[in-house]
Image (cartoon, rainbow, N blue to C red; front, top):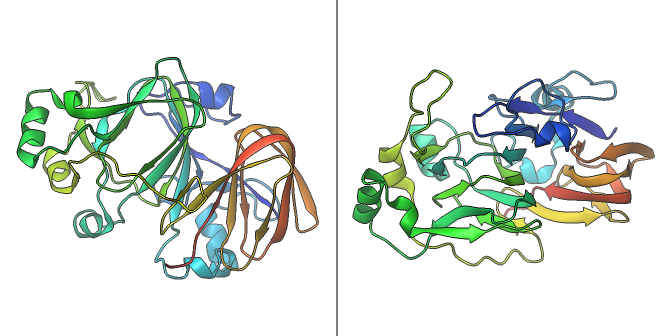
Length: 310
């Protein structure tokens, strides 16, 4: 099986910048370039195979052609492709928002909820993000602070530096703020409830839609909890995430596909008798059962797999 290089689906949300094109080699004419969905089977933006005999197929079409065996046995329990990986360039502040859990999202939105993790690639001096609350508050106080524009006074404003990792379970209020570039690994979902958006106007000249009623139902009004990921950068039912550098080796067995997102540098990825030159911004997909792989060169990558059921 070949090493698949994927082309992303891109988004031009109003808070985006130009770093993904200028520094991460993402090809897109969008301006601003806010997000690149580098591993995606979501209907709102599937990624596309860029090399080999299946070049031009979307990732969902590739999976349909070759069968779900390319995803691995650990994915059999999921109705759909379990994860979505993005680059995000926040030149401006993202809205303060929250994602529902599976039960709420399936009942109200017809898709799954969203737990995610962020790996910080760049952060300007003084950059921060909102990550849960400073202390527990009641739903009544939460609602009142949304209405009187004092919500940020009770949010946990976390300083951000390159290499930081944040794990955001569904129900955690959060916002990426300006001057940050991240790689995000998340559940395969595009359900977002905006709570506060700084009064900004969308492309249609109207204030962007808020989802306060839904947010009040799904938000956990408590500070973030410490997490133990068993040696991984992050881990949950849907993914494990690890950092690998040049010289790193791994095994892509029949249990799960392996995704490698090149976050810095340039080098090569070898697997199954094939070697492919790779560089910052590249997204590589190894079908389950591809065997041993190795990264060489001055290079860093996020490695993602789907774990077995716990």
